[in-house]
Length: 116
View (spheres, helix red, strand yellow):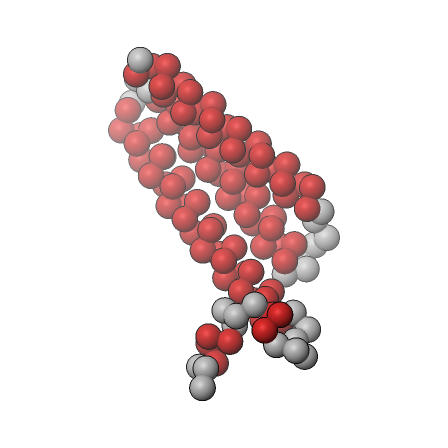
């Protein structure tokens, strides 16, 4: 016998009469976990930036902190869309995520340029 909380983690295709409620809850849990990880990365980048006190590496870490904030906004938009609070298109969410990933690439290139 499967415990009740494990049923939420199974794909909705495993249940013949499922209307998708279990998969949406699982998606929300995964989205919340991703948001927490992004928040931890943001706080880590922000703490490193505050320790640098305006050195050459500060701009790269500042860009990384901003990029994690953009990714956090993108994940929040995804959660809002999944909860059907607002009708946000997938294109908008993917565009915000793309901008966040691009900002990460810019921050890493700034750090690499200073260190080399």
